[in-house]
Length: 325
Ligand code: T6T
Image (cartoon, rainbow, N blue to C red; front, side, top):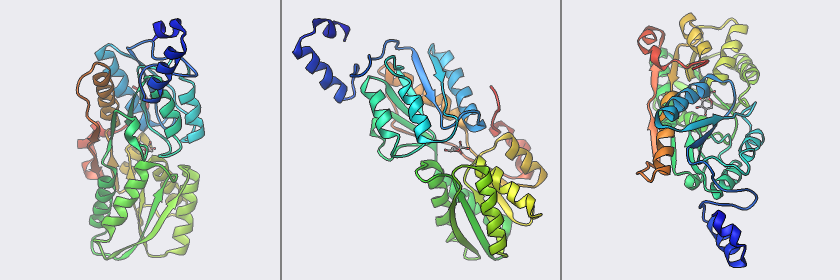
């Protein structure tokens, strides 16, 4: 590509632009990929056990395969902040980018720009609505996870009747939306359990706590809460604790952060649906490396999920998330 630029002809520039438009190496507003062994990871948010565990898996695999990987995460789960991280890849883009898009629509344009410079895109965890920009996308089966959560709740409640609250995060988050949807669909198979709807929390524990406080006040027969991720779970536990309702309302959380695992042990949660973020990071790197080395790539991959209760937690300790590698 450098040779093409050195020629400096109008024809050469036209060839370059055509290549960029079709997602090949090179690009306007910055150079193409320089180092074929350089990978990048942009998770949904920084310092959060799910993404830390993913990063640990990705770093170990990159090292094993002879790649280097730089991780930079936004301070909040927010598309504007994540776009800054993507744009910061700038004129020296990585050979492949592993990214968890924080918004299934808004993140398409910035990711497309990086792809246009020749970077291979691998989606890890969340996904865009139009995933065609990615060579591979790897996440848990989140719809199935929601279903598993509803089945677990139904088992815990037994024959008792009552209302159930679902706490989602932010509209446009593919994973939690699928969990809420899978949960709600499965709940219809359990006529003793009635959904009082899905509430958004902006992925803020304080908002989740406030929604639980309000639901407890308005719905005396509340028997269960499904928290679709770590922050909603932690907030829901706070709401129940503040109202003195721990153990009286079943709390099913998603994820297995250290604080959720503690909560399962002490009875704040009755069950957790754990993902395998380390495997997502590790196999995300495998897919990136395969794409870069011209080997077969799998377009869509699904990671395992595990429903864990207090009585099964010790046998499932390998699924607990890490705070550091
Ligand atoms: O549940 C995970 C992740 O799968 C989801 O996309 C966003 O929230 C978490 O990171 C947990 O906080």
